[in-house]
Image (cartoon, rainbow, N blue to C red; front, side, top):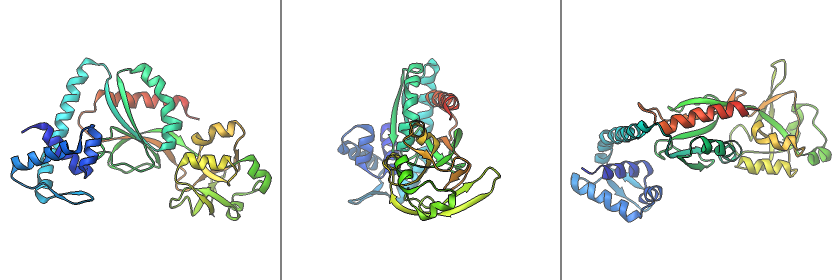
Length: 301
């Protein structure tokens, strides 16, 4: 049986769309549809229930997937291992991160990475949607948060601290808050996420923690957009130190509570590098992990 048919079948199950698989592999959707039809004919079984919105795998398809998916993964690992015998880091590497993290922390690393590993081709998927690493065939995911229980392997790249910042113009108009509790009376700019839009937490040097209710005057779903809103004087906002560092240094933003740690969730947050658990980790993945760990350690604020 043609391995290409099996790989196409696995991708269609995970992605749920001929069009999405075709886009991923840069082929026509009709080619994907024909491959599935050929496999169905060879197996003598219908593999998908076709609807206008999504392809739903049949019970026969799910049973077949249980056997085939590990085999395709093992074959891919064997091919990668054989290719790694040259000791040259090369090939395509699919990496995902949030838009803000990608633009501010990941992209600045790429010139040095390319200089060290010119044969490595990165496919950066910058999105504020948390992607399924396995279904989207992501090699590496960079994510923010406390210790992440995702079933993936991971390494901590950089500790993240959050700051409540505002523009000098906003401070001039409204005055600088004397204590974190004063934020409760202000219209803040924030993410439309649980926690961020409801309350912020502050911890002083003694370790005392105070929770303050916040009242959004502006909700922005993207970190870069929220940063620009703060610079433009649209209210105090809670953002990561690595995202606000340049604007604070240039005087475009002011840290309203420099003596406090701040967070919407957990004080112990970080940038995590995550990857799927597998018996063999391709050289290109290992090379990226090692380089990223060194880069972030050297550039951590």
